[in-house]
Length: 391
Image (cartoon, rainbow, N blue to C red; front, side, top):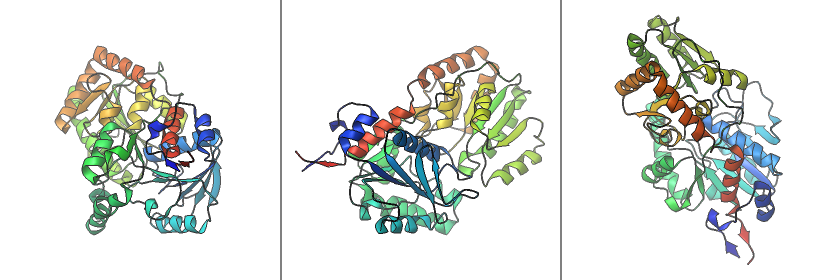
């Protein structure tokens, strides 16, 4: 028996060809939540796109995740089956028990999405397997959990889990995230594969730019996104660009805090909280924006920046792993190290049409490299490399 230890050992080919060569037909995916969850974000979108591409190419994909309010326990989306059982915390033991008992059906391979809390699949799952891990979560634990639980989560992620994952292929989104996984979690770089995310082909430039200088932000309403800080920064921006306004698209448990902050600053005339929107509304928002802003403290990539780029919109974003790959600093947008620089660069771009359009044009050109079929193909190449073949 020969074990393919590197994804590069598989020859080039389209997804259907790789599937035929691998012998894999049925893939089970374990995830904390799916795209139907009210707080779904980039990780869930990524998983949905990959699962959909795999299903379209002929794989039988089952996606095991937690309950999502208002959605059926068992359903289908984009060709793959979704099983939603157990709550946010019980999903981990119950999904593992379900796999061990065969409740999710016979599988040829397993994919785990490690989103903060792992499923520890290397300890119990036999056969071909791999992990999606977008970024470490050390900065998120104290923000989303109580101090005691945050310490437990951090200890689990940094000390307990990494030794279990040293020999399993891990797919991440960017070179900067790979470096972070290596440095912060001690995961061996030779087992970490960078597969960039894709962009839906529907994202493209339009001619409906807002008459007012519009800053757009998109993402889950949670503290790590720092949308509250964006509002504070916009107060400073408006001193130099009085007509500047901001829209935030997304929903989450921080919504009440953001709304209170808006009321505190009497910002209702220039601030709009749009909630979750459909694809058509999101595209329209990108097309009317002047700048996309992301003051987040941690990202695996920053897919909203790439979607905006496909619409010709430059970014101002924090200089963090993930953003460093989604934004080419000084070419497709600006990366900043502190809130003062964030304000300065928002003012500069909102005030300088030529520079804004130059960065937007470069962002649109660079976005052409991102394709979901390519993402799904390269991710499957990594998974297929774990299959044992006879010499």
